[in-house]
Length: 449
Image 1 (tube, rainbow, N blue to C red):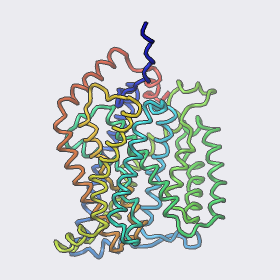
Image 2 (cartoon, helix red, strand yellow):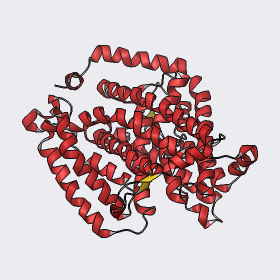
Image 3 (tube, rainbow, N blue to C red):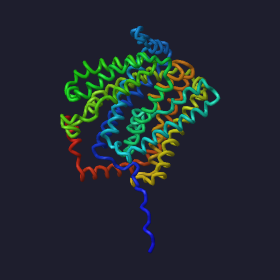
Image 4 (tube, one colour):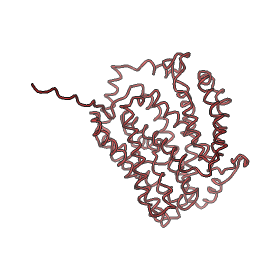
């Protein structure tokens, strides 16, 4: 009698369809990001034109105009206020979204989160290595190794809107998670590697308003959810104090934005009916602040950061042949797809996972190319690496813009060829939703009860 074969290890599906509620929620986020991405691109184009026009001096005079209270280390240029202050709103939403995904989203399940998280790590590590190899002989330019680590989700979604891609929700969730996770990795890198002259006292003092902010947000989550003005009057000053003290400590102030976002509760308290009573405070704040981030904060940051005086054709050639720009272009255009595709493929081999039958590896490749669009965080890290206005900073920004446009073009070529299949997958998702219906929890979230 033949022995009973050993049971095979369980398989899970990569890019399987998530819950319909999650698909709708992600779709709503991405629709808002589409508008934000269009504004971001417009702001960057205006800055580039102005910085290379006959009146370019006025652009740089505006960017470098300083104001603020010097004793609190807050006498900053408009460009610095955009990078340190307005971008903290963007990272506040990163903190909210990251916590939401892992507390109440589909990614709280290990089999759904392991692939995009691991792919994000690969998509950060490989570009950093490629940049470092290109700039290995120059310690001065090697400092910019973290520039090509992040994906700009707003820019990427704007590209999807322009090309009219019907990218299925599973791949959109994958792209969004990649962007959120590598933003978190990037902000961790900023906190650890780009902190100069650390001041322990302000950092310790920052824990006081942060702790009070966290306590009040959790204790009175229903109150702050119902009373919009209360959050502005009570929580905003505590958040501003945390931001100012983190800034004074020498750690980049956007780190405070992430901490403040993570501090907000995702679920409602049991006294308020628990998760099934509707969206938690994190969801309410995300709804309130995303338009401010996508429509105001990020475009203004892009306007003050993307303005580079190229100096004509010779200047453009000089910038693009600088090892800084070469490393960034290679890292974003080649490193991102290699890191994301390679990690995903390796994970499927190690865990015996398989792609959903609706998708092929060419789809993963297209999304990986799209992840090579690095803009907002890459511009920020470039300024932290070389100092705003330095020659390496200018060349890094030219490299970021060139790489982002090239990655967008390549992703367009790949994803457009698959639109027919994406429409079929979209129809399948709709059929599933018609059979299963929309979960009651999501219906309650939509009404805001």
